[in-house]
Amino acid sequence: MRMFPTSQQTIGPFFPAEFFGPADHDLTRVSAEAAPTRRGEAILLRGRVTRQGGLPCVNAVLELWQADAAGRFAGDADADPDFLFWGRARTDGDGRYAFRTVLPGRFADQLGPRASHANVTLLGSGLMRRVLTTLFFPRAAEELAADPVLALVPSGRRPLLLADPAGEEDGLRVFRFDIRLRGTDETPFFAV
Image 1 (cartoon, rainbow, N blue to C red):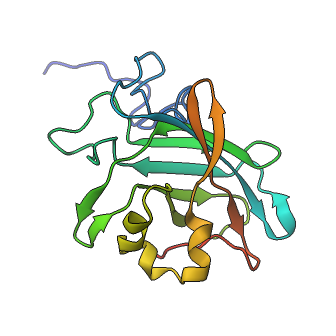
Image 2 (tube, one colour):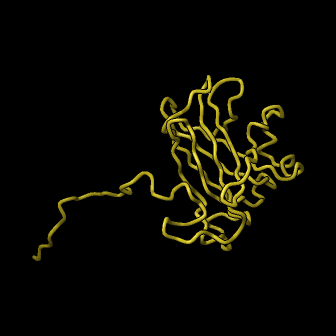
Image 3 (cartoon, rainbow, N blue to C red):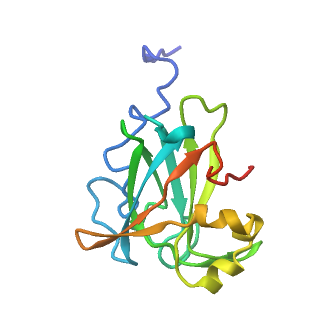
């Protein structure tokens, strides 16, 4: 019988050594070393996560996922190979976060035609479970009016799901999307 040496570790590690990679907040490139995608309009998405009373949510984790500039997703045959489709950011001491991404394209799914949007899940201290919302980019009013998910939200609360244009930085348009936990102006969240 022939014997083979075995490693000292019989299982794992199966997970990455870091929860956050150096460019996880940048969806315009597939790795920190990769060149950014050349498709679509690169934008900055910034915001602040607060709880009731405007207090910052420190060290909250946001995960963002969206379509590429043409409205395609990672598994689609003609999806942008240089776009990441998913990213992760953490809030700072003031509850601020930032992503670099592209303005997502429209697409249709089983619900119908969808407006330009990105999905956000939030995990943080004091939350018993993650919360999920969708932010919509302001484009044409008819595009937003036709979105079946936005239509589920009472009309008076829909503005809470719109990313606001917030100027320009380094040649990129900036959008602001604040997330509020609790209170009368709480961000609408969706059940999954």
